[in-house]
Structure formats: C-alpha cells, structure tokens
Image 1: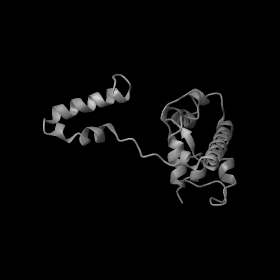
Image 2: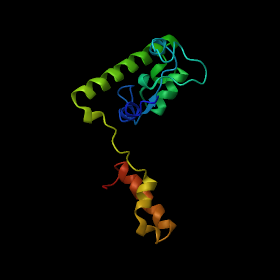
Image 3: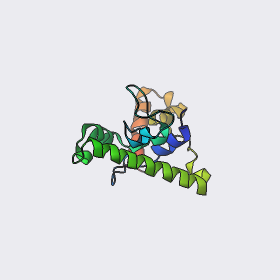
Image 4: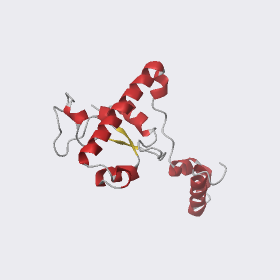
Length: 152
C-alpha cells in the first residue's frame, strides 16, 4: 500500500546529498538492510518489485544517477557502502517524519502542489484570446519569475 503523505513530504525535502538543495524526487533503496527487515517484502526483493514507500528518501535527479553509476558524490563508495548510505538515509528521514508528525501533525500534511508554468499560463484565460504568441510570452515570463530572474 502506498504511503502517499510520506512520499509527498519526502518530495518537499532537499536532496539528501548535502549541501545540494535541488528539488528532490523520492528514491527507494534498491536492496539492503531496510528491505531485509521489511515484513511486507520478506527480505530482498526480486526484479521489477518496488521497495516499500517507508524506505524512501529524497534525492535529486543528478545524485540519483550518481548513486546508481557510482560516480560524483558516490565515487569513493563501493556498492556495499552505497547500500549502507541508503539505509542510513531511509532510517533518518523516516524517523524525522515520524518525529515531526508527533510534535506538529499539520507540518507533514501534504501541501497543495504548486501549479506548473503551463497551468499558470492557461489559468490566465484572457491571454488566450490574444493568440499563441502572447501565451508563449506569458509562459516565458512566468518561468523567469519562478527562477527569480524577475520579480513576480
């Protein structure tokens, strides 16, 4: 069963590879201690089986690729060290989530997702009547505002 609130909270966290502050995706460890002790999985999982959501932790796409390729942030780690690091991150973020939920349950309630630039531009219906070039220009300006290049 999916742990949607936990996964949404994980996606709201910065990448686990500090000092990276990139937007993260949830990452499920491939194998290791977390899965070996999971009652629902009965040990190491097989091919094409997803790890438990409770073991997810935040990784940006760059560090996700580096983890699996063993380069960049992870180049000095062998496969066993990378698995141990994943297990450590899984435990840390799960304990952090549960601790925050006990103290302030509202703090872990998933926030309404921020609309995409395209959704923002489409919500400005009056611009559509002015033509596709204006919609394109509005999208471009919204992207710049979201990146902080111009004041929103």
